[in-house]
Amino acid sequence: MALVALKGSERTLNYGAHVVGKADPHAFTQITIHIRPQKDPDHAHTKDFVDRLVDSSFTARKHLSREEFAASFGAGKEDLQKVRRFARERGLRVVPDQLVRKTKASQLGHRTLELRGTNSQLSSAFGVKLIRVREGNRVYRSHIGGVSVPEAFQDVIGNVLGLDTRPAAKPRLKTYPRLGGFAPHLGSVSFSPDQIAKLYNFPNDVTGKGQTIALVELGGGFRPRDLKQYFQEIGRPKPLIKAVSVGKARNKPTGNPDGDDAEVMLDIEVAGAVAPGATILVYFAPNTNRGFFRCINGIINDNLHKPTILSISWGGAEATWTSADMTSFDQAFQAAAAMGISVFSAAGDNGSTDGEQGSAAQVDFPASSPYNTACGGTRLVSEGGGIAETVWNDGASGGGTGGGISEFFQPPPQYQLGPAIHLPKSLNPGGVAGRGVPDVAGNADPVTGYKVRVDGVDTVIGGTSAVAPLWAGLTALINEKLGQSAGFLNPYLYTIPSALRDVTKGNNDTTGQVGGFPAGPGWDACTGLGTPDGAAVLNAIRTAI
Image 1 (cartoon, rainbow, N blue to C red):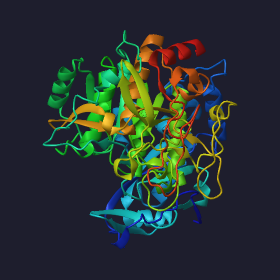
Image 2 (cartoon, one colour; image 1 turned 90 degrees about the vertical axis):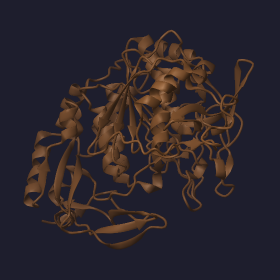
Image 3 (cartoon, rainbow, N blue to C red; image 1 turned 45 degrees about the horizontal axis):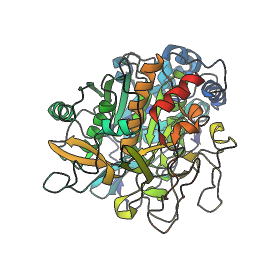
Image 4 (cartoon, rainbow, N blue to C red; image 1 turned 90 degrees about the horizontal axis):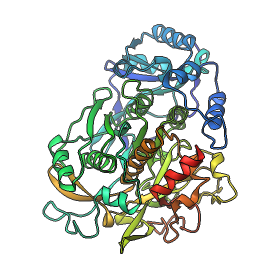
C-alpha cells in the first residue's frame, strides 16, 4: 500500500541533541491517532462555524454541549472504522481509551484512537525509522523526517502522536532567589494571590461557586498538607482540589521546591486563592506531545467533571513543535471555544526569543493558538492602594514576558483586525503578519511575585505561569456573577479594551540581540490589551452577552 507524507509531521533534532542508536524494534509503544472531523477533510467547515460562534457580534451566539459538538463536529463513525481496519492490516492493536471511559466522554468527540504495537510494526506502518536520541541527561525515542500514512487514509488521519517522546513543554515560571529556604523579601514587595486580586479590583462578593477550573500539569505534584497550611496562612478557604490522571501520570511530588512541584503548587494556589469556591481539577499527564494533547483534549471532552475553565502554564517556542501537532491542539481549542470553555495560556518567560538558541524571534505555543487567551507579564508596584505597572523584563538572567507575532498562525484572527489594533510584523526576515501574542497580562515579575508554599517551603514565584491561573480565577468569579459561562474571552476583550489597564512602559527584549517589542498605548506584543480591572471586565462582558 502506497504511503504519502503526513503534512507538517517532520521532526528534526533539538539543539545539542544527538542520535545514540536505533529504537528497540521489539519494544511495544502506544500512540494516538487524531482523526479529522466528520465530512470535513480540511477542517474549514468546523473552523468557520466556531469563528461565527465566538464572534461577539454574532447575535445567535450559543455554546454547544459536549454531546452536541461531538454529534456535529466529532469524528465520523466510518472514519473510525477505516483507522481500525488500517491498524488490523498493519498488525497493530486498537487499545480501549481509558481516559474516554473515566471521563464519560464521547469517542466521536475525542476524535482519537489508541493503537499499540512494536516499534518495528509502527516503523513499517508509518514509514519512519525510530531512533534513540540523547539530549543532556535524557534519552528519548524520536524520528528524523516526516510520518507517512497510506494514501487511502491521508484525508482521515490528521496526526500521529507518540512516536516521538521528547519533552514537549516547559513550565513558564520564575522563582525569586531563596535564602535558607525562604524568600528574603517575603512579605515586602511580594503578594498573596488574593492581594493581587484586590489590587486588580476582582469581584469580591463571589467565590467562583459552581465553576470547575482545570489545570494542566506535565510533572510534579502537590501535597495536601502544604495546601491546607497555605490557605490557612493567607486566610482563605481551601477549595476542593482533585487530581485526575491521564495515562500513567500521577500526582507525584518530587520534593524539590525549585522543580515541577513549584508549577503545580503555583497554579493551584493562585487559582484557589482567587476563586476558593471553585473546584480545582489538576490533570497530570506525561510531558510528551501525545501526553500534552491527550490531557487538553481529555479536559475539553470531559463529560464527568465538565470543566468550564482551562489554565495552561506549560509551553514551548513554536519552532519546537511540528505544524501537525499545533494544528491538532488548535482544533481542540476550537472545540473548547464552541463549548463555552475559557482557555488561558502562559505567553512565556524569556522575552521575544522565548529562550530559544539562535537569532530568531519566537512566540510560545500553545499561547499562540488564536483560540487561547494568551497571558503576558508585568511588574506590579502598589502605591497608596493603587498600582503602577511596567512590562516585566529582568534581562536574560531574570527573564521577561514572552510576546510577538506567530509565524504559524497567519493571518491574524478576526478579533485582532479591528481599527484600534495595530499589529506589528514579525521581527524575523520576511516580516510575516500573524497572530499577535499576548492578549492580556498580569503581575509576573518574581521580584513582585506571588507568595506560595511548595514542598514545605514558603517562597515567592513569578512568571506568566502565574498569570494564566490568575485570569482563570477571575473568570470563575465572572461566570458565577453571570450565571453562565462567558466562554472564549478574546472576542469580548478586543471590543472593550477600556476594561483593561493599559501598560505603556517597557519592552520584552531580554537578550539585546534579536530585539524585542515595545509597550505603548493600546495593544502591544508585551502585555497585549493590558491587565484586568475585574469589575470593568465583568460589566463589559455582561453588557455584551
